[in-house]
Amino acid sequence: MITAEQKPMQEIIQYLEPYSKILLVGCNECVTVCAAGGRKEVGLLASALHLNSLKQGKTIDIKEITLERQCDPEYVEELNSYIDNADAVLSMACGCGVQTISERYKEAHVYPAVNTKFMGASLSQGVWAERCQGCGDCMLGITAGICPVSRCSKSLLNGPCGGTSNGQCEIGPETDCAWRLIWERLKALGIQDRYEELVDAKDWRPAGGAGPRKIIREDLAL
Amino acid sequence: MENFEPEIVAFCCHYCAYTAADMAGSKRISYPSNVKIIRVPCTGKVDAIHMMKALEKGADGVYVAGCLEGDCHFKTGNTRASHRVNQVQKILEDLGWEKERVAMINMSAGMGERFAKTALEFTEKIRNLGPSPVKQTKTQAVS
Image (cartoon, rainbow over all chains, first blue to last red; front, side, top):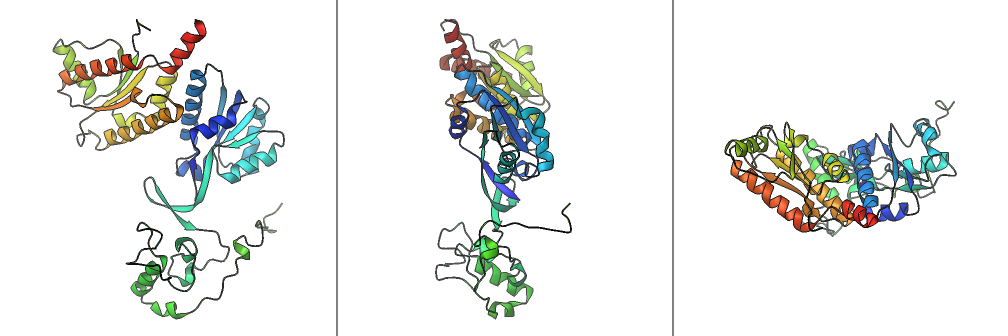
């Protein structure tokens, strides 16, 4: 899923300074799961903004709404009945959600309330770790299901660098060397021969090197 | 604000703090009437939004009173509540409020004296902090 974290409160307050009617929009997808911008977080942020405005002796009108999926125009249409009454939209979705609203409502002042982080998996409650960089040419099939692109600090494709030490990456002891993990898993699966197969230099164009990416599925398009 | 009487909301667990309040009553131990008790089935039921709404509606202080650590009737409700109290404290700090306006307190059902003492101490702490920033602004606006 896409992970995100709420922006510092003062940054959000600064964005909203000139406005008094705010449409606060959450999303029921990834940001709900990583507790950054779901219905609950929308309620909490609205309450915090209310407390702040009460302290400053201002009145602020916040309409809370959480869409099923903010990156989908179909659901963003639900804002039609509220958008005209709002001076600004504060989105708690990832960058995709914020931009879907901006594209749909050209006149609206739209602000992000979260920092979108990475595509990650949940390790335990409250802990998420990066597992995919969306390189567009998945090589998990030859690396025993462990991604060297996202989990090796240098995205090395043919074994570890000299910075690996006791199975840890040189950037810090909390980061496992991805190639140590790959080697151990290859061994455990009895397919360590694959380690000997060299991978050619990766084409980074599908990873974004050739500009913004797009998928067009003509079989699905209406 | 010489005559400031704090308004305090206490979310009390049915299995411990609420019973302790009852115990304080049975023992004729008085505690400040500033503390308004809301009985909850477990402090794990108290979400951050409940504390925030209490503050929004004018409470000067909020505390959550749950079972002693490791003694939660539902195993981990009080630990969850403690995390949520931390979460609200962080929000208050970010807004420039005193985080001490929100607290987590642990006690068992038999601790009537502790309930009364805690209520007294928390009331005094909030009295020293003064009215909630919301009320302070309203007072300034009136004067």
